[in-house]
Amino acid sequence: MNFTKTIEKLTPEKVFLFLFLSFGGLLVFITPPFQAPDEPAHFYRAYQLSSFTIIGQKHLNQAGGYIPQNIVIMTNELIGEVPPPPRYRVSIYTILHYLHRRSDLRKVEFVDFRNTVLLSPIVYLPQCFGILIAKVLHLPPLWLVYFGRFFNMLAFIAIVFFSIRIVPVFKWGMVLLALMPMTISLATSLSADSINIAVCFLIIAYLMHFALVTDKKIVKSDIILLSLLTFILGLCKVTYILLPLLFFVIPIKIFPSRVFYIKSILILFISSISGFLCWSLLMKDIYVPLGEFINPQNQIAYIWNHPLMFFSIFIDSILNFGIVHSFVGYLCWLEKPLPYTIVILYILSIASCAIFEKNVQYSLGIIQKVILAFIWLLFTLGISVTLYLSWNDVGFPYIHGLSGRYFIPFAPLILFLFLNRKLQFENTDRILKIWIPFFLVITLSITVWLVFDGHYILYYH
Image (cartoon, rainbow, N blue to C red; front, side, top):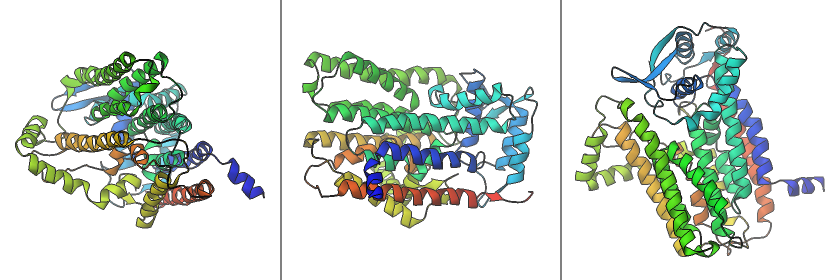
């Protein structure tokens, strides 16, 4: 009887909040410093912004900024090299040493972090806040990393919690996506992807709320909030400016008039594109290619002149299980994969939520689902092209750097493609309330163990 009452009280929001605070809090401190994708570069950019240097510097053929020399020494000692070599482990005593070691931060040197110096301050606000608090408290430099991670996690939790609350359906599916090992490992690091994912989840939840809950009219305050969110979205990444296309899924009947509907569309697209253009213009003078043979202009020409060849490259790069595996969980520097069994069960659990989650009230028409599918395909192509331009030599036969984690921000769209009121079974909600928390506890426990077991040595090193 008590078990039944406990199950009935479980809500997706509460499960998300409890599990993320529990396991996310562990990962913030258990994951060794700088053992997340590009975390040293994210740290340097967040530190630069916390010093109120908004625009980075260009020095010779490098782009980055001036960082205290002792912080650079600490970073290099803790990570070894970027990325760290396979089976690289750090001594707990080395970390404890730096947690107590105060350093003189007055002497600086130029550091090249060209892959993050171009990113907008908006995606580093939580990390900067944490770093500033650590600075005010005069803590040793390594604490800046942990404070930045912790506040990055709190920001992610707050935004996604609200997203789960306002989305009318697929709340359990959103919980699974937000607590995926890949997602939680990014959100508990200094990565800018944390805010990218959270903002996309919020906008999708907000727009799909209007698309499905059609008994309430959209008012000016809703458009003002959405325009602010889409402007922020434009500051995040260029491919995210496609997300306002989701506005076309919203029925015209919930707008006061057709004129208001057209104006709203224009405002959202202008806001999104303005955010992207404003930041791009500020950054254009410090752009440095990521590699010697990388040339975006020549790469565009290659795609234009060889469209079938690029399409073949695109298909070959997308259609491999590595994309799915890195979507669910490649931990740390993407060198610690989750067991295949967990990955398959995770995908099946998400699919089960999409197909069988109880829904007797909401529906989407064929045209609305076609729009959703089009947005997803456009986003997939946009991510692939962007990576091909910025990370690959001209004409490279594979999209190097394409990872499943780049598809997490738009992943909730897939859920809505399966929205239906026909496949309804008794006790579906009860089964999901039991299975999902249980499965997540097991999966996240394995995640924590893999991170700890794969990165530490318990003696002096």
